[in-house]
Length: 279
Image 1 (cartoon, rainbow, N blue to C red):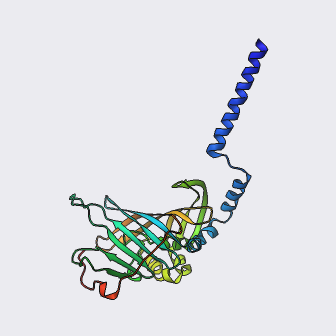
Image 2: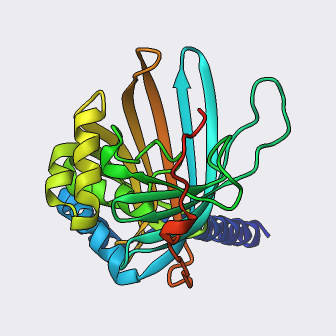
Image 3: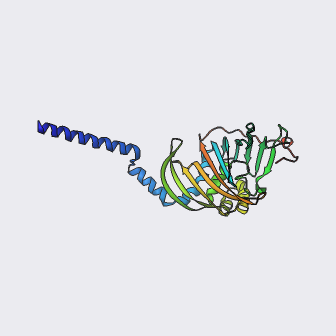
């Protein structure tokens, strides 16, 4: 009887150990293949991030969600956007939703933005602009190169910024919206990014390099197994010319549904508003 009890206890211990092993493996165990991939990811994080914009071009297109949080003088606001982007042609469309004003006024109509090399088109931009007209902005004339002004960072410009990566570390594996990704953290040099960017982004990034309060931009980026950006968060700092204060901006871009159809038609000249825009 004693021998039988010992055998039963031994079986229970073995079963518990096996179950624990399964739980550990399900939550964090990685085989030799995954370990080797992680080792390669840690070998050259800078080079990997330099290539991430090219991987988006190969992917063709995607849907995008954006979030931009600005903080200055104790005030914090968040602007959100959603749309699609074609990386080959560097054109996209976003609907950007502004927050309610402090007085609690009705929710503002979303701003429709069309993104193109060197240009930003906006509808419902501000008071005094006819409802059927677009406002066109030359992004090279903006002190932030339209990394902040539009309320959403151009998804491809966000990727092109990583061409200026000078320091980066591989943090580890995680997931974004159910997709397995590798997390990298580092800083990008704006001037270097402008120098190495594609022709469509070069002038805008050069303007940002001159206009931002700091020459480097800290970031966290998450790449899938094909090297495509799934999520990137930049932390910008620029000087507010009107209030003479520094504005801290955290811009997050989420990319998903690669290969999604994109139909962006830029406005005709006759549809662009040429009058004064109310602030």
